[in-house]
Length: 150
Image 1: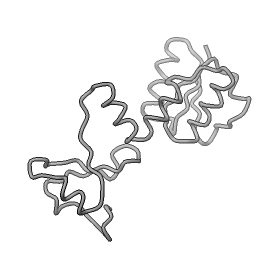
Image 2 (image 1 turned 60 degrees about the vertical axis):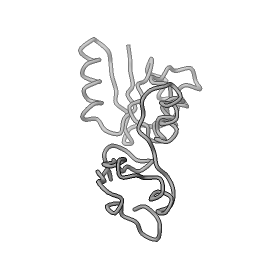
Image 3 (image 1 turned 30 degrees about the vertical axis):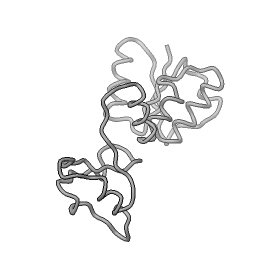
């Protein structure tokens, strides 16, 4: 079977998936920004693994799906997971435990948080990986500039 992997990189998890599938006899190609063209050339594979949630790879996945080529996981679900806010509410809707979120201006946040809420993990609502994640032990550790979280 011919399998394509839509990924940002050819290393780490994408490489491991590729090697595992090749050990099972599959012909596998990893598509990154260097070799991914969203056109009919993608139809040469039997199905695709969507490894990246970046829009470029999501566009490719939606293109493939629209032309009857299976993509796993489903690009629509992956798109929802791309946005942490939407993913948070999907998790809560399923009844799973999920962390609490606090939103608003500095004054609003100060009014919402209590001493027993700390420590907190501060993370941007959009982003990738562990970039800009901080442990906050008190309200005065949150960095604010012009009433906006930085």
